Image (cartoon, rainbow, N blue to C red; front, top):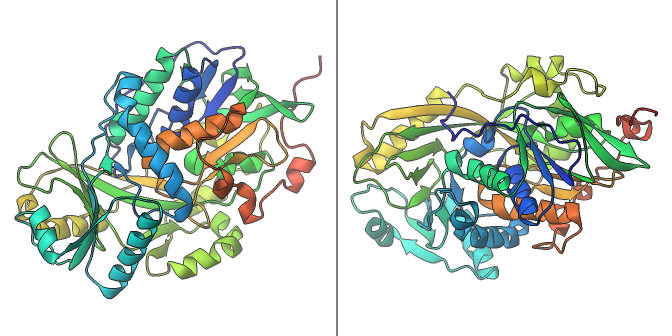
Length: 449
């Protein structure tokens, strides 16, 4: 069920002390570790499972600026600039290509959304091309698109999730970073209220700063520290096809499906539309914060009951640094792909692009997306805990933002001038802060000499 991702072998040596520990081996964490190592800092990247094992290796692979929340546009623009030079910087192929992305609309509701995307893109100076039905037909020769209009950004592109985060990780190691896989971080230690170390299942690493880039696990980790981080999990399903000739040369998203050309000649395909939100006790606890977003997006969201309900009931919310944690009990989130949803997506794709009719499906997989109440990530200093920066909640938008988001997190953690204004990504926009558990000292303290 899991997609094939370039393997990154972990180092055997646990460093005694570093300048920066990055928790999480997804694209944000790997990007942050790479940037920090380039600056000459001593870095340890610590991942409970494997590099790009979860959503960073399971997403669509779009690298876009168009169609984002307004808060993300500056970071998306800077990230695209960084993508352009990553193959050279990492000395590895990330799969990045400037291939163009098209959004297409068929219904009145979709057209209204497309008009909003066009206005927002113009506000940030993006070169976009409005397309009528004839222009769509010329851009996708041989297609049978029912969409009436579209919008294209020719400079946006795509990359390969199987390659990108591993390229960052290995590039960081080239610069001196230590990569620790199958090594969960259990908690943090503090001295005089400042982060001083991370406690891993293999021992303690002393450090001056920590970046938490743990994706869907970030809320749980923060909760044990007494930090209130609003975040829910959304389940997604994706497939990839065998190589096929005559298919679309640009990535396309409309009201029914998303499709991206791959370097291997195949396509990544997913269903657009109603997205399953896993209904768990933790989701119910957060309902007041998410109510507005759920109401606004009620046509695109479906609350679902699955095995995550029982898992959530069994998952401890707090633990000590010497205890086995949920991060060791589940190394990789690997949900079953939703076969019916993927079959419908593939039918719609084959109807639009006859070249894909009957194409062989090589892989299907599920993934878990970490979502905030407003769909915009948190990249911010942790409240009341100097030395910890949180970079999470990318809400399905994180792959394309990866280079810039990782660098921004690194800059915040090390006191450098930020790449973009970090204000839109502040955690306190949700009214979040330190909880009673934190005020009572939930964070592990160093042993008394």
